[in-house]
Length: 160
Image (tube, rainbow, N blue to C red; front, side):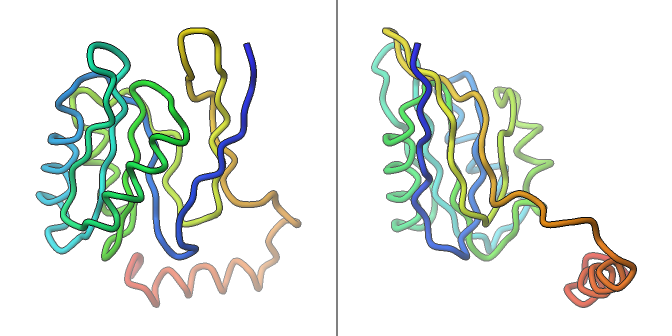
């Protein structure tokens, strides 16, 4: 078995959600979960089948995001993985709905950070072991940092 790091290609400000699922209808069900939660969201979804035709199934309502999702799914090459690229919404807005899609097994990451997927590869294929999301910490927050964090959350409407 060999370990590999696959860098997810995306614009800096774009959010991505990476997860694992288990059934051919994943792309359609995730599509419905997103539009039923945040109708104005623009997104692309790619789901990598792990058996039968082993195709990357692609759905979404934005062509460039669909292409980006498909490209990254192909680069990672891990069966039963899915990739959602998202605009006009944040992952926090749709994660609960995605987690409730019956065939979704796990979410590895939901981020706008630079992200790498760590995969294991053997003679049958690849599987996702985890992700490297952003950078490591530089220290522990101070009282001033805490005050700024709380103000920011209120300024963007996530706390009252």
